[in-house]
Length: 329
Ligand SMILES: [Zn+2]
Image (cartoon, rainbow, N blue to C red; front, side):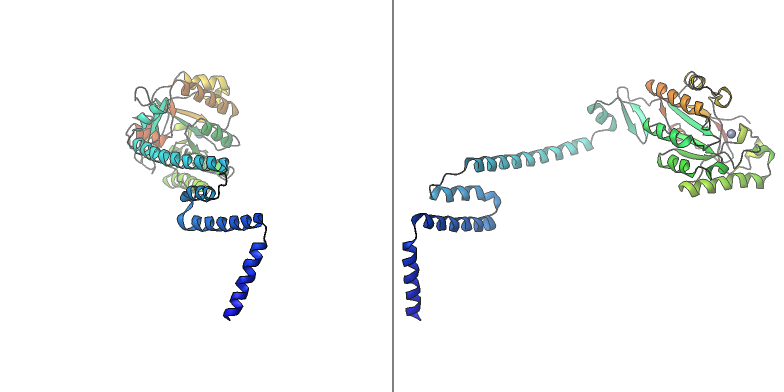
């Protein structure tokens, strides 16, 4: 056995001696690469550059300058990363303690929002509030109107007719998705509530609520009595707060976008509730241009629900409101 090993070693060294020098160097190089791999494995990548340099040095091999540079760059990036991490954590902490107004100031924004309400960054004052309300829809125009309102971050309130909800369920869905408010104008507008029995009133409002709920998963919050007609006796039978208006551009009558625009813009005030009908294209055009003009003046457009929250009013069932004041009926 011993003899065999001896013979093997003897032959091995003899063959090694016969090998050309460059082959020996190549074998050594392979061995060193393998050692480098082991070092990488056990010591970790961060330690590698020095190990790599050490290996190169020990064999007088030039350390590829590009490798060194790459490594240096990587190391620097790592250092920058960790310092920017620390920086951003500090920024986050700082931002957390900033008020919405300070943050807007920091970002150079003219407005800031708290609980969905817009305030002026420079003065801290609440932006004047208007509520757009649309009756008698939805119609083929409603989805387009909602898309345009969404682009302007303007919210509206839709007093829909139940009978039309069934024809335009996508409009109800779009309104809900856009954060607009769905309310009831009764089922079919055939009669004012004052001419109906309690049972008929319940049907008009109940059916409409069901249709809206089916299309959007939301219940109708307020009621606008058809023709705005309501009296004390009837109001007492209605299980909803009822909403009238205080700005009427008479869009159904004028059928002219410029007149609708003027009717809204000329009468605008903080607390304005506009009545319109999303069944005329002149109305849609006029309302949108009025929104543009009034937003330019600093107005914000909110749903009636947000409106009452802003003015700290809680309308109760059976009550009739005309904007900020209870209606005299
Ligand atoms: Zn109506």
